[in-house]
Amino acid sequence: MTTRRQFLIGAAAFSCAGCVVEGGNESPSQPTPTPSPSPSPSPVDTPLYMLATKDGSVGQTYSAPQGLTGVQWFRETLTPDRTRTAIAGASGVTYVATAEDIGTRLVAVGTMNGQRSVAAALAVVLDIPVLLEGFDTAGGFTATNEALLSSRSALAQGSAAVEMQGTGSRLGGPGLRKSDIGYHDPVRFGTIAQFVDLGWDPIYGTATGFDLTLSRDGQEFRAPEPLLAPLYQTPQPLFFGTMWGSVHSSEIVGLQSAGAGRFGMANSVTTQVPDAPRIGVDALVARAGGRPTIVIGFDDILRTQYTEAFPYMRARNVKGGFHVAPGLIGGQNRMTLAQLREMYDAGWDCYLNGSYDDILMTDHPTVAAALADLQKVRDWAQANGMPRGNDFCCYPNGRYHVSPTRPRTFSARTYGTRIATMSDTTGIRPGMFVGGYNVPTGTTVVSVDSATQITLSTEVVAQVKAFNFNDLSSEFSYTKLPLALKAAGYKMARTTQGRGSWLSRFGIPDRGGILAPANATSNQSLEQLKADIDLTILRGETSEFYIHGLAENAAGQTDPAKFRGLIDHIVARRDAGQLDVLTKTELWMRDGKSSLPI
Image 1 (cartoon, rainbow, N blue to C red):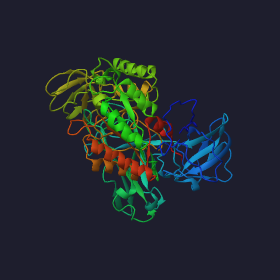
Image 2 (cartoon, one colour):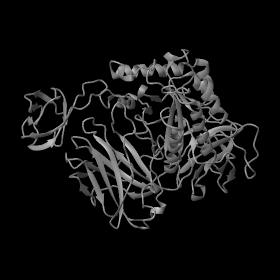
Image 3 (cartoon, helix red, strand yellow):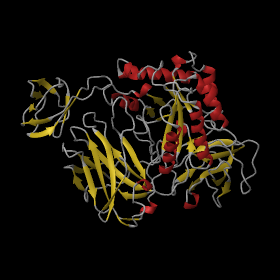
Image 4 (cartoon, rainbow, N blue to C red):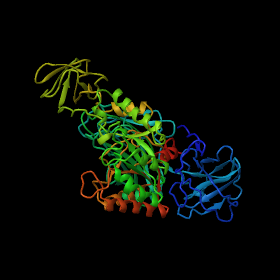
């Protein structure tokens, strides 16, 4: 894997009056009181962000900003006092994190352009993860559910990964198992994570769940829910791309008390017809939890976001971000430009609504037209002096495709010719793409010859397997819009109607990127929202919460008391040193290009 570039942002490159707020802001770049081993402070600190190689854990290198002289490195506590302790002998321009730094934030203090400057890391130093299985060869694995196993290029670490191909088995999707992945003590597992590539093929992207089971001496320890499952349902469950699936070992009944010994592992996949996906697996890792992180976003620029949410959060030094829809500014119950600028100047990000007037992106005639409308939003934000956060957008109403439901599928018999027969051809139309094991890529339906027979564009070997049929003629079928956003350089595009957190410590892959899930605050109770946050802390993951307006008993709105309770819970956990609250700009700087450090 490629090592992340060292990335430094200082006042000259990142101008924002509110990006660092004095007096206990959650932003790690905040200048803080310096106790006596540190140099005497000058009247003004110039704050700088500082990032590290890979994930910033033990053994990773931190670099002071270019031009910072007289450097002294400190460990900074995560509680509001942010006490700094000088690290003896650490006065160079680089510093390699050690075990003594675990659970602290590294800070470099020095002088730049005649001013005292403080460069604080966005990362928190974590222990080195433990590689349970590297998947560098398919050898040693046993296929399950008639899967085919092969080696493929590395996904997260090492020299290779393993690919599972389904063969259309009605027993379920492809799987694998390995009886011995080494001697381990599960008490030290912490969060367990695995990197998975589901691909972007709309025909074979039929996985609906990915499970992990650990085993020891014949006893199995299976996560209580899929390690990975769709976190977004708009308009139907789809499951694409690359992602880290994770679970804390304490959530797996009996695992932590199993005792040290030699462990095995197994993966299984739940799929839909034609049950023939190609899924890459790599890097099963323990002690994988990252710094728990909360991101707070607001949709539709409703006025109560400024009159109620903004002052409540600002008083508690919590920043968020708003998705700007320029066509709504100044409208009834909407914010004005001046109000948006005030929030931006206080350090909030200006994210993009998916369209200028908040229409569905899929209402445009073409994907190109949707991207052009999104560019109008970005152009407006930059022309009005709010460029920070413009790499991040959302899908209005969470809608990123308008694919029709796949027609009902049946077992199909083929004969080594272009003819296929089945018990019913209802719903099948010429031009549909055909999926199935041994069906050549790009095969389509040429004609529906009868109630039981179709002609295909290519020959298919003699077999009896389940087929699916897909209409990909729509401009917005399945994966077209997300992939277009990715190709256009957008870093994250948020969906709606999802719930849950995701692991960003080792980078932000597709799940946290162009199909990013988020937790709606309007349709969950305060206790559910608190539980989501506490699970995020347990697993060391990242959660986004999105809010529309604040109003009592209004559809799609969040009760003000519930909102205040949510913020209070986040602030209490932050002040206890248990989590960070970041904007997406900060999250991407910290984790966007991170990688597994083993």
